[in-house]
Image (cartoon, rainbow, N blue to C red; front, side):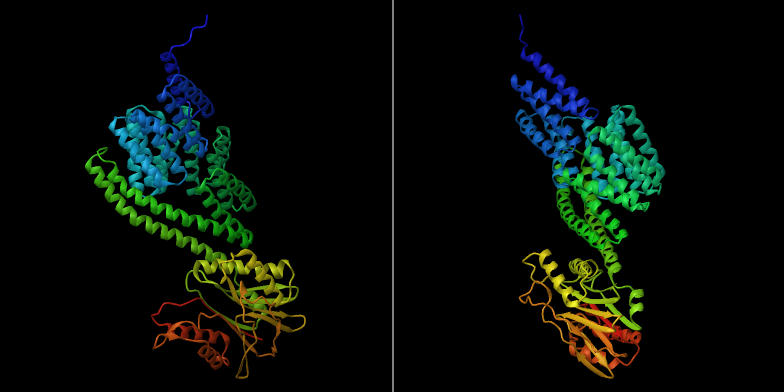
Length: 618
């Protein structure tokens, strides 16, 4: 005869399964998930809501560990209202703590702060010291993110001491790792090494494989910061193996991302590219945004080193876009973190609340300064890419006996550019003004350069007008229909050294011809390269370029500059008169005169636009 189990016995079984799932959640995550699911099933059979909620929370945490954040949120949000209905404050706190982990890993710090604030207030309320220690640990990482390393170390130390008091080895190992990372940020590398080694040894001793992998990753960062790339590479390869065994997709991405950067620093460009592209694919699959952002930046460096500036631009644009989105997230996070001190209520002493207020006010300014620095660094990197694509002095010297380039970007980067290429015995020089200035103008200029180069170097298009037709077609294909002004005004000169022949095409900009004190404005098409009402083919023009002829190509920045005694524009007529007046002087001297003229006219006014003038003597 089969005896049916009493509900109390089944509850005990559910509780035991939940306890076991909690204990092995780090060391055997898949088994913990299976136990949690079985516990949910039994709980529903005997109408045991607390057992079900606990099992859901355990399962949700396991999904956090294997980076399945969608399922993690689903399970945790299913558990939370059950705990709230039961007024189970510890269950509510645990669930909100686990939600914090999800949101922090998704870089949604605003929601993460909401949840950890509620969690810590409940933990203080029920005097749950082990979980207070966990929250202190998470606060430590929050302050590291906010670049307040001193406060971060203080929280890690509080967590370390409390975990040691409780004999919680897992929490102790985590706090040791946090201390190590904090000292890495402060460049106190000996202290960092000491704490990280302690963390790795302790985590290995207690068989905390996921924690051990995290500590290895932190130690690898230390090795990179101290230039020990050989050791960093060894640790990274071990870390990839361990994370793979654990099914830790985020961990695999972290280790491989750092491995790609190590290869980049060691100038192993092909290996770096292979690894980073693999990381990018995997990070996009699991929505690991922070990894995606940093990998795009690393790939832009890889492509720059390969000379693939078009791909470098594409990766940099994606990095820049995500970086700006993160800046917005940071602003939201700061607004929420300023509310933190008001939400802790009676959970901490008044002195601690006041200290947090002061730290938050300081950090509000520090974050803005740091973000401005990050943006400036990013723009400086864009400038490096742009400058690498401009016509080099060596190339210009090979093709002109005498020349000058007056190039004055309004901002760090420019929408104006001068570009050159040699192909099949011909020399091509482009002087162009892309839509906009600053970062938007720079992005357009790099796109325009890529299409000009594609036409001449890849498609073997030789006539300047056909090059412009191709560039216009590519621009129309690649810019949105509402971007009617996107494109460029441009002049493209072709010198056929075999036939001593000079041809050009000009879009919305007229070349200037000067010989023996006479000046001519040469013909040009009154339409830009890009979306326009006019869709005619560009014209090919020939130049009567006798020896001693000077050609001037310029954009609109000089003529449009406000200044002078009445604050008016310099204007094209005055610029052309100036060019004619100085045309008998050496071109190097002409450049100096033009630069001095521009600065005197501008005076204390802000520069209006990018400025570019190129002068060449045939």
